[in-house]
Amino acid sequence: MKPKRNPAVFAQACSDIEELKVSSQAGLIDLYFFDESGFSLQPVVPYAWQLKGQTIEVVATRSQYLSVMGFLNVEQPLIFCGRREH
Image (cartoon, rainbow, N blue to C red; front, side, top):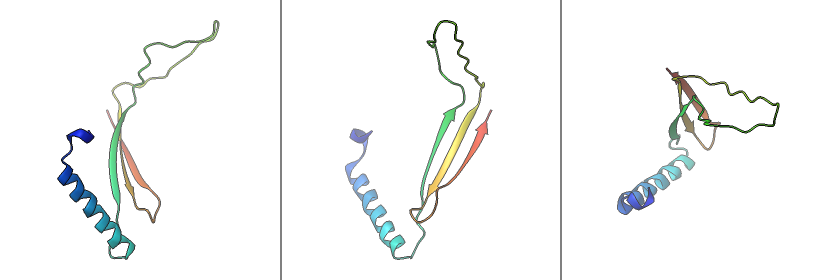
């Protein structure tokens, strides 16, 4: 994605973040960083290898997805939550 970003917009965003960090360190604001992601609970295992006489079992769920959000403040513990979608 790096080649696709606008250098001027990226530089401005970096400058804005630095200003926010300074304000946070001065105690003027509580600065949190946020990110989200999603995970499928359906494992993708097209094949597996096992020793002769040994059985491998993969428990799979169907049509489930886990959404996770996280808020991070460098002064406090990570705050996160998740939600299952069917």
